[in-house]
Length: 178
Image (cartoon, rainbow, N blue to C red; front, side, top):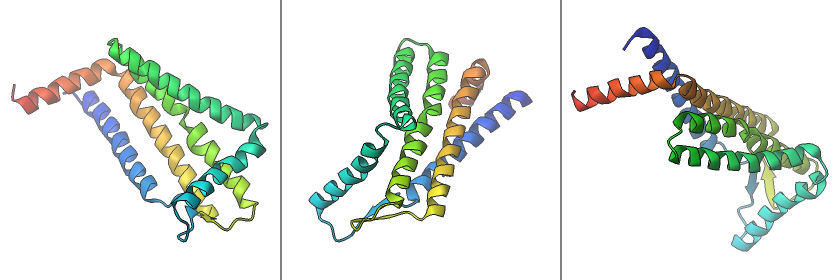
């Protein structure tokens, strides 16, 4: 492997490690809405529906809310097209489509929780608690960083497809002992 291949592989592995670490941190961080401990299962379902339905009524006519919902639906459709292109052996197209779908993640992962947080921070509630504002901001920034890393990871793979294929062949041949 030449130095360009090693650099490319290093950047790709760095992005992969960043994604893994950030995802683990995102999973460890507390949720935006923490339900009360004294609620039974039925009450928890009711509170979750209330959390989801509250901003839905207010933001129904908001253009950004509609854009976030449509962005989420479009993301799912693009993932399906990526799956079909992978089945049809169009790997580069599939990787570019996955990067595009990942670029739409902020609609569901950032904009929608921001709407909910903004709505519920102005309301009185007793069945759940909100995440502190600074921790919520950190969570949103973390999700944006994860999104950017995923986009970069898949775009690098798509743009340098031939180099990645040759790197993969070299690595697999060394593992297999050829």
